Image (cartoon, rainbow, N blue to C red; front, side, top):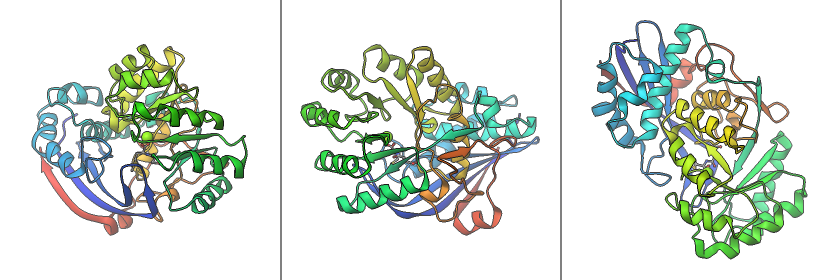
Length: 368
Ligand SMILES: CSCC[C@@H](NC(=O)CCC(=O)O)C(=O)O
Ligand SMILES: [Mg+2]
C-alpha cells in the first residue's frame, strides 16, 4: 500500500465522572486520532497517550510532533507499506511506542478494510465475545467507592479492579470484600506508587484473596518486583514495566511477574501485543487486555485482541458508558458482563461523522 496522506485529529472527550489514579485525576481525555488514507481504503488509529507524561514518557502533543516530523514521513516514503512493515520502518526512531502503535493500527485497519478481514480474524480471535472487568478509581470516601462498585456489579462486570496508593489500599479493599463477599474477582492497581520498602503493607493485601496486584513498583524496577514476589503471596501483574515482548521475556525469566496486562499502545502496537500474548501463552502465563480509556475505535481493537486464546482473565475492556456519555462510534454495550467482538472488516466500527465533528478540537492533514 502507498499512503497518500494522514489526518491528525484531536478530539475532546469529557469523562462521565472523574477517574483518579495514584498519579493523576482525569476529568476528560484529549485524544489524538490518526486517519491513514490509501488508494485502497482508509484506516483509523487511536493514540493512547495522556496529556502529560505521567503514565509513561509519552504525551499527546509530543506524539503528534514525532508523528508529523519523523514517523509519518518515514511511512509515506515506502511504496510497499503494509502493517507488518510499520514497526521495522519506524524502529530507527527510538521510543514513542504509543505514537508508533497508533500509526500501525491505522495502517492495519486500512489494510484489513481493503481485504474484507476483521481485526479479530486477523489477530487470531477464538471467541465472539470477551469477558469484561472494570477499573475503579480512587475516591473521596469508602462510601463513595462502595456505591461505585455496587453500580458496576449491577451492570454485570465480571471483575473489579481498584486503584490503590499508599494510604488508600488496605481499608478500601477490606470494605469491598466485607460488602460484596469473597466471590467477586477483585484486583488492585498501584500504578507504580509503592517502593520495595512497602513490601509489608503490600503483603497485608494477601488476606483478601486478590486475583493480582498490578504494577506495585516503578516501571524500571524489574529486579525489585522479583524480590517483592518472594514476599507476597498474591500474584504480581506488570503493566508499565512491559514495553515489548523482550521486556516480557525478561520479566518472566527473573520472576518479576506471573501475569501480564497487555496494552497495545504501551508496547508499540497490536502486532507486538500479539507477540507478547504468544510468548506468555507458551510459558503458561495468563494475560488480560488493559485499557487507556479508549474511544470506540481503540475499544474495538482491544476487544478483538482480548478474544485471543491466552486472554484468560477479564480485561479493562469496559462498555463505552464507563467513561463516555456519547462515544464517537456506536457504543460498546455490556451484555451479561461481555462485549461482542466486532465482525466487520478492519476495526468493524467507524467514527459517527456528526459525533466526531462535535468533539473535534483540531484537524491537520500531513501530506505524503
Ligand atoms: C488514566 S490511567 C490509564 C492507565 C490505567 N488504566 C486503567 O485503569 C483502565 C482504564 C480503562 O478502563 O480503559 C492502568 O494503569 O491500567
Ligand atoms: Mg495499570
